[in-house]
Image (cartoon, rainbow, N blue to C red):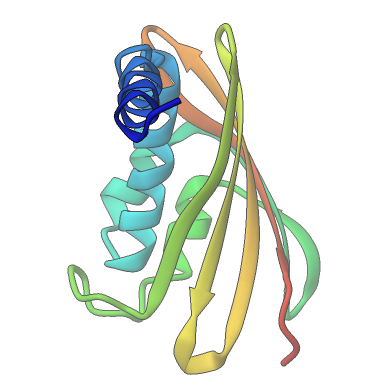
Length: 143
């Protein structure tokens, strides 16, 4: 196959993947990005809005393993300046959607503390809106 044909075939495959984007996957990705932006820039309301009001977060902190609601989680960022980048760098690693449910995985790195977390999310589409209904996380790096 000539280089031109190979290039043309490659471009067609890439374009077909872009045009077949799933709106549900895109919407779930937007919610996870909203969570990342809200937590990285201390935007409390943006962070809370990414979660369903009845969402449960299962996290291990200084006091051990516990459950939190979205407001309690957003309060973790209360000591930081709203709207200012706080050093949390988030990256969406994967999203899998099945009808009106989804799972997502993200990495969160905090360079000043040399910490890396993996966050796992469970999402649900309710009333035409995707929201996080559960979250857990684990730390990869040592203290």
